Image 1 (spheres, helix red, strand yellow):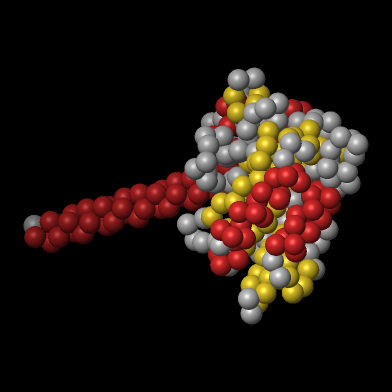
Image 2: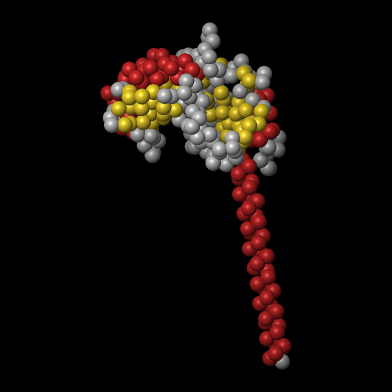
Length: 275
């Protein structure tokens, strides 16, 4: 009798152990699916602008040149090797400023083009239309699962036209909690701070980062930053930027967080040196 009870007890313990293992396995699988699902939502987007100026708009090369010239008239600049179409990066070396370019995270050594952010891969807290997950229902009928990046590309390409122009409303200096300073051109489209589809915003707050300084000592001094921002506003405020045309469509760029490829103006490109 005792032997039978022992066998039954062992069997019951083994059954419970199997159930626990099965539940842990299901939990892990569910977690993996959730992580994959969350990752699939992390699609970022950029709006690229014409590089060369037109009769009623500035090209990003002219914006870059104007900005660098004003920086050189404000600071003692030791060297300037910034790409002509890129976001400017300021560095401090022995109390002298170095002007170079902010590098693309996916392509080290390549200056990141001046652009407006269309979508972030994760919320920044600036507005409620910064990410794909936040705007999905204003773009697609079904959002129970993340749309494919190809569908996101096609949807935005159908909305944003290559003839669109954005106004520089003002140039401002901001500083992040980590101490990084940004000089930003705030943009408007149709006098709005976001792109809209109907009555709903479908973009992050429209802006173009002109300058980044990881050394807060460069732009933190009011005797330099005040006149600098005033000069930049005199040069850029109320000027227009035109969406670039590529492959007969608006030059929009999309990518997924952690992926080494992008879709730009409908063409897929792989960056082999992506990290």
